[in-house]
Amino acid sequence: MLKTPLDNLTSQLQPGKNILLSPFSSQEHLSLIINHQCNPIFYDTTLQGCVDLNSFKKIDLTNISHLIYKDFFGNTDDLEETKTFCDNHNIIFVDHSVFEKVKSPDAFESYCEHFTATRDFTFRKSSYHASIFPIFLEPQFFCTKEAIVIALEEAGIDLLFTQLLYKSSLYLEHFKACSLFGASECHKSFIGLPLDIDKTEADRISKVVLEVFDKHSLRRCTF
Image (tube, rainbow, N blue to C red):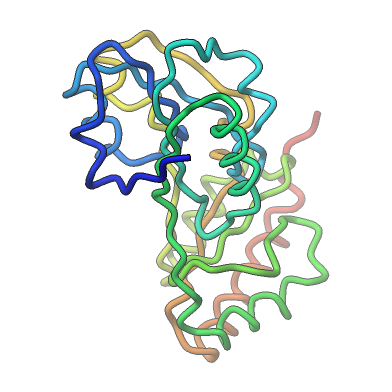
């Protein structure tokens, strides 16, 4: 298996080839593919942003030359299985994951301690991302996510969100619109809390987050 850094990918792309990538990849990846007259093919993800290996069954692999792998904010649970898939199908695996360790373990531990009992959202108890602590809202809070975000930002919390690359203007200029269920649900549920902070600030943010979710619990979606 050939493992190629993204910087060296340019010389390997052949016009007309299809490139597998995550819907949460960067504009840099998409621009590179389009500029070399290749076609981006998005695989679906799990509800927490990992590669959904089952989604490959719906993709014609005959013209796939590369798969650009990108972890979802430090979650690499899918890495080895994705490498094996590429090996088995003669696809070049391009690793663009980020293995930065948490710079503030005290903040990470504070979030985990405060959020352990909540049923309003889920989170990973292990992480390798240096600055983002991902939380995933339960579906009943999708309807009130915008209000939750506004309340958190008004409390002075610097949040991070995802973008779906197949909804970007750059993609839609060249290709037909598409949709992926898992990625769409992940996008709806994800909020990134700051992690490059001290424990005192993490304690404050944790308290605010729980209070905001509690306030909006009566306005949650009904199905």
